[in-house]
Image (cartoon, rainbow, N blue to C red):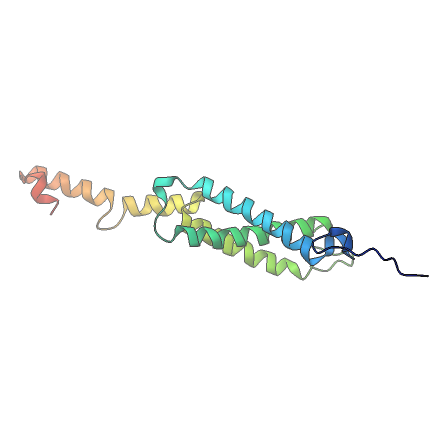
Length: 152
């Protein structure tokens, strides 16, 4: 059988041998998913709440979120973390580790109940906390000390 004289130009997807498993297609899907995760995370942070280094932290969180999403998609497509032979899939530990990383990034970015609880703890407790400042203010008022002098 003679070989066809038709050649594919660079970038032509018809030349791919393995369809959705091709390197180019996987890169494209991952890049789109990464951009989506980055946009979702940035949408959660108000403009005035962005501090120096937030962009890099969001980038790390977006990569972790992309990994978690891809791992969950894979596990779901395989019917769960337990294989047909009743064994835990090898990717389950990796998925758990990346979820842990993602939650840590979210905590640092101030998302979720843990971050809110930490913020409340800082406001209420400690020498610079809200509760101690209110108590000091009450003591100073009882002693007749002006508020400006007490805050120094």
